[in-house]
Image (cartoon, rainbow, N blue to C red; front, side):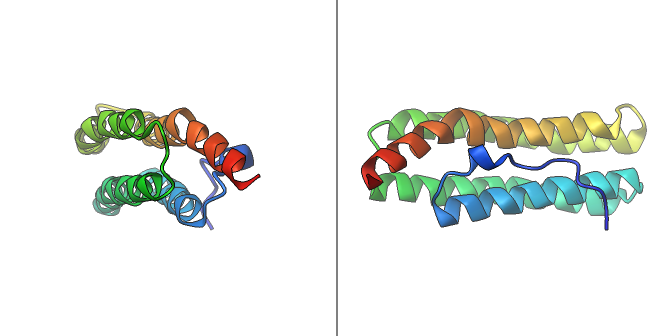
Length: 137
């Protein structure tokens, strides 16, 4: 069992099953990518990064549908934050190639995967979490 590189803190759980499940899948992909990079399994790490990118896009689509369904008042700002993360995603493939070529340490790539995840989970989703919590009360 590979060591865990990243864990999503419990206080970043949103409280919506679909969103939290997506976040858990993305964290799993980060950890699997880190393990593949450590073991110099570059083809597998590239595949996992592509899966992470697709997972982020799928997560954003799912989350935006939930935001609409719950009538989240700051949906436009939330969608804009998703678009900012999406712009960063293709760079992850370039960074993977740098690791493969020996031009970059694998942990910098993992840091960037975590940054993409946290930019959504911490910056954007915490406002939605507060909204969900208040509307359940």
